[in-house]
Length: 155
Image (cartoon, rainbow, N blue to C red; front, side):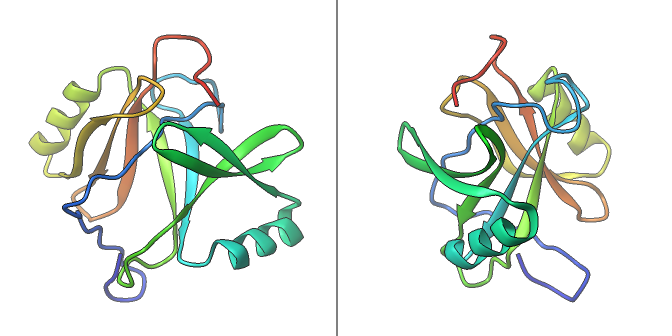
C-alpha cells in the first residue's frame, strides 16, 4: 500500500494469496457486522513480533494450515491476530481488519452499486469460508468474510 501520508492505496497482485477466515471472536460474536479478525502486514516479522510482545505481551506462534504455516499473535492459548509477511516493497506495514457478513456475494454486489471497489474478488479460504478485500468510496480498505457454517473454524 502506498500513497500520500494518511492515505492508503490497495494494490491487487496477479499472484494468488492464501487468506484465512477468522477462527475466534474479536470485538463480538462471530456474527454478521462484527469485527472478527485482524492481521498485521509487515516486511519485518521479527521486529513486529518483538514490539508487540513488549507492548502487549503477545507471543508469536505458527499454525499449520494447507499451503503452509500462518503466524499468529497469542495471549496465552488464545489467538489475537494474524501476522503476515509482505514481499512487495510498495506494500507499507498496516493492520488489516476483517468484518463478518452473512452473504459475501450480495455484500460485494452492494459495494459495487454504492461506489466502492472490490480489490480482491471473493475467494475460498482454507477453513471453508470465503473472503474479499473491498474499499469504500473514500478508498478505505477492509476484508469482509463469510464465515464457515460450523461453530468453530479450525485454528
